[in-house]
Image (cartoon, rainbow, N blue to C red; front, side, top):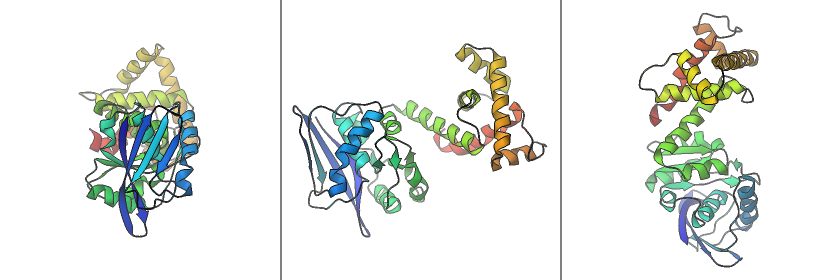
Length: 290
């Protein structure tokens, strides 16, 4: 099977769109053509380890990859992500039709984490000029690339996130990014991810976003309790513990919300006050997705 993914090569001030052509056939050999430097040639080992640690298997097949245009030198590790996605697309893990919609760049750690790359801004300008639906970059590069208007930039944390996003439909894409936005808002307020209240709060925020009419916090807690098969008091207690932990951390958004809610800056917000503030910030952040 032959599939194509898209990335970019930065050579000085010039940025060139690169097509990653991946073909899988019977065999066990790995062939990489297209004037890749040593870092590009070493990508095979990084990709194999990243796939394994992300819960996938490196295909046992004869893999031929061409980086077109083949006469242009490609340098650096930013080709890791498109190579990995191309291989998974050729292996049937990702729908082929999604690959043509995005330009992507990123270096892979052995555990699948995406590492930042250089040249995100000129690459974003090139992606917009080529009319790609979006640009996928490591999350550390997202702010730089987002400077370019009329282009949707996706900052990804790891390979698993990217495979999940590429392999789902539009409704699942929306849910995935809304969940990411929930996590971003909770993290900004200092919510400890290890506490069960974090997961409950995330669910409640998502329910509120999708609801046809405003929801009271008590109703949202009931939804979560029913879904988890637990008492509503368990949800309430978990949220109380989370708010107390956030107060101890004292992140600026939490302190500011305390003052807006008539409490001292070092006070502890009630569940209702906290949820109201979180939901307001989340709605502002997710307006483009709804």
